[in-house]
Image 1 (cartoon, rainbow, N blue to C red):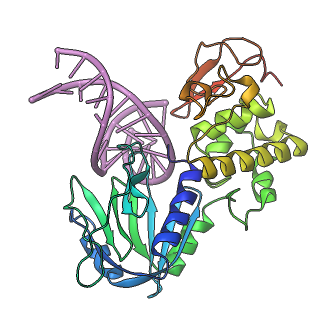
Image 2 (image 1 turned 90 degrees about the vertical axis):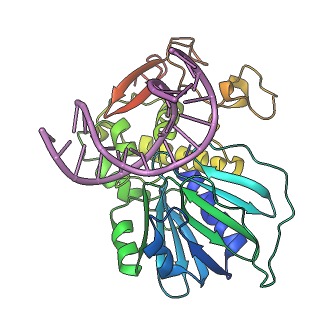
Length: 293
DNA sequence: AATTTATGTCAAT
DNA sequence: TTGACCTAAATTT
């Protein structure tokens, strides 16, 4: 699921695999043909993530902004084999020998499906399908997007006080505030539910009923959970002692969360059935016993 | 072969 | 608060 950890993994992967390299950029599907031309045959200089946005910076000064939205995903072919990041796609395959042309660029497979963007470099290829946003912007356009984003706990420049200044004044529920990307960037439905459970906070409390200490605990926990997500490549929020199989590796999906997708199942701590409700179009999960404060 | 599902954001009611 | 949007894979007919 593409929450913030996935975007930071993407940024790292692009920087590591293609940083400093000249790339051929095309739009096999055609919908991004004009944009692709703007960054074709340029050197990738920087890759960074802010919340759920990926920014790829080129030596011309142009930036590619990608938001995966609902179904977006990148598929890669490089020294790690064929693998993908984003919405669930087919599993990874063993590293294949990359074919290279006389110019040293890899030979990518003929595109299947709706490939919005294709990158081809000397160390691999990358295909983007189904993004909600994919556009070439200049640095002021990038700044405009980032100005509308709250602090991202995975970024060095993140300032939790900025988020707190909104939360502390707001009548909106803390559950809704955590999903607002202009308050805190990178949190999705899973991190929202799981962090509130781990902090013991009742999700319907207005932001202004959350005190500073609780906020600091919540921010620190979100930061740790996101960092784990970047490391593991998936979201796991349970502590081993709360899992049905504490030693199983990899952690089975059924043991990954405290409350998410566990409607009616017994809470891992107190056995109370987990509750779920629609809140602003998304399903909110929580334990009515552990989260009664 | 058709329908459902999965997930995030935004514009229109 | 609801629907539109982007795509592929899983599930049901």
